[in-house]
Structure formats: structure tokens, C-alpha cells
Image: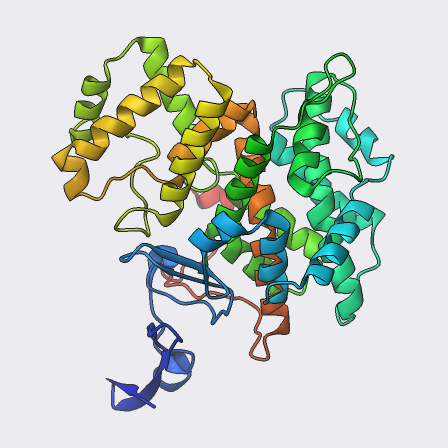
Amino acid sequence: METIRVIYEGKVCELPVIVGTEGEKAIDISRLRQTTGLITLDPGFGNTGSCTSAITFMDGEKGILRYRGIPVEELAEHSIFTETAYLLIHGVLPTRQQLNQFSVLLNDNSLIHEDMQFFFQNFPRASHPMGIVSAMVTALRSFYPELKINDEEEINLTVTRLLSKIRTLAAMSYKISRGHKVIYPRPDLTYCANFLNMMFDNPVRPYCIDDTLVNALNVFWILHADHEQNCSTSTVRMVGSGRVNLYAAISAGIAALWGPLHGGANQAVIEMLEKIHREGANVRDVILRAKDKNDPFRLMGFGHRVYKTYDPRAKIMKKMCDSVLQKLKIHDPLLDIARQLEETALTDAYFIDHHLYPNVDFYSGIVLRAMGIPTNMFTVMFAIGRLPGWIAQWKESRDDPDWRLSRPRQIYVGPAQTHYLPIDRRH
């Protein structure tokens, strides 16, 4: 095994180099402090691997994303969300029988306890859906407490229950916020079709299931199902390392996803387009402002922190975006602005040189708006899609023989030792 030698104050530490199946390399520093007294400092953990994982592989330089080794492009084209969820959670693609059983379990567990509606009714009407969903996921622990940490069958039941009920919770939060009648899940509809029906069906205008929109939602959720050790996933792992129950770990992940720099990016795209439309700004002027380093304006939905080339998910979402807009024949001034921004940025040398291509958030925001999803529900939609990845990461961490309670170190830069000063002597 290759090693890296660290020598500090005469102390020698041999650090093994860990090599992943795709050739990724990492220096195992777990014995560094014990041997030398040193720790590493890496704000934002951009160069720090927190775990080994067999779930998702991504290469930002080459624009690669795979779930359990399968390219996300293949899953988006051939799979459905529930099958991809099974793949992430159980590690293999299901047989037809296994997928049917999984689907039946999802349907059987789609209802929520009627008493939970009282929780919804008592949230202030202005409450953000992410706060509501996070709280309600935690509340599920009180209604469905039978979770034995070492009982695999019970873990699988809890996993399926959560995956099924989160879409019901999300749709119910939307209906109650509008003062509308709650729509219950139907056993004859698929996972995605059921969600759309619970969102948009009402007694005076029954919802018509559109296969194009169902397919678009499947693809949207597949593309968001996991993305390696991002902010919310790392949160689920860190909270889960305390051996908390699944509901608490997922609730923490939802809270982490709430921020505008993570899950709220697609919402920020629509808010930017609304602002451009409201102010009557010219797209060319907007592009010029985005290129001006002295202007605080930022073009939302372009570029990605990890992908240094085109976001592989964006290519798929763009195709789906074109399909949805063509099918619905929507005339929306915001979508017109989005198209102009896309066309301009894709041909502008500055954006090309800086790899500022439209990312998945740009196209997904447009698709969700076209489908009729309200802007404040965008991050909730992201959370539903990311749930299988969070569950898979929680399970993998729980089953890791090298598990340790997460406890990062720090470098203290505060005052040196001082002594307590009686209050009468303070100035």
C-alpha cells in the first residue's frame, strides 16, 4: 500500500493512501493527531473525505454522475423514481417482483395518521413548506415509533413508510396552506402520478393525469436522488452518527437543504427571472451585469461548485424542459426570459471560458413552474427527490464497521487564558 510520510518535531507518521474503485485517491489521516499532535484545517471540507461510500460516484471535471455504478443518463431514460430509489437504498436494481412488492408497500403506507392534520392546521398560514415538512417528518416518530436499530425488517418498513408518506405530507401542506380540501392518495396511481393528483385535484376541477408531466417528475426526482457528500447529505450522516432515529436524521437533512446555496437554488432562479421581468431589464444588460466583477448581481442557475464542465443532469433536464413546454404550449414571460438567457450565455465567450453553463437548477426551476408547482414548494420537491439518497447514506453509515461518532476538531483563535473579573471592577 502506498503511504505518505509526515515528519513533525522528530515524530514520523506513515499515512496510507486509500484508492477508490474509480481511481480516486485520499490520504488517511485518522492517526495523524495521535502520532504527531497535529490536525488538518479545511474550512468547508472541500478537500476532506468524511467517509468511504459505495452509493454515488461523481467526477466534476469530466461531468460524470453514477448511482451504484449506473450512469444517471441511463436511469433518467429507462428507470422510474421508485426503481431508482430501490437501487440507492438496497444497492441493486430490483427484479420485477421486488419492484412490484416495493410499489405495493409504498401504496399501503401512503396515508398519514389523521391526527397529524391538527399539526398542519396550527402552523401559521405564512409558514414556509420546508419548515412544516421538516417538523412533520420529526413528528412521524411519535406516530410510528417502532424502530429497532438492529432489526433489518423493521428498518426497511420505516424506510418505505417515510419514502411514501413524505409526498403525502408535502401535498397536504400545500393544500392546507391554500385552504383547500386535502386529497388522499389513490392505490391505482404510480408514485409520481399520485403526488401530482394530491397537489392539483379538487372537487370542482378533477385533475387530468398527463403522462408528459408524470415522466418529467420522475426524471426530476431521479436527477436529484443523490449527489455524494453535499451539505444536506453530510448533515444526515453527521446527525445519524449519534445513532438517532431515521426521522430525526432526515429532518436535519431537510433543514440543511432549506438554504438558498443548496436546495433553494431552483427557487432563486425563478425569483431572479421575476425580478428581471418586473424591472423590464434587457437580457443583454443582465448578461453584462453578470460579467462585471464590481456588480453584486449574480446570474442564478449558471455554473456549479463541483462540475467544471456541463452539469450532466442539466443536459437531461433541458431535454425534459423542452418536452414539457412544447406539450403544455405555455406562454409565460418568465420562460421567455429564461430561454433568452440560456441562448445568450451558451454563445458568450466569457461564460464558455468560465464554464458557466446552465445547471440543473436553471432547467428544473423552469420545469416546476411550467407544471404549476408554486415557487415556495420548489425546495420541498428537491427534498422528496433527495430522500432515497439520504436514506441510503444513513443506512450505509449505520452499517459501517468503522463507524465513529462525528466530532470535527477546530483551531482555537480566541483570547488566551484570562481570569474572572468581579463585576464592580469591569469598565
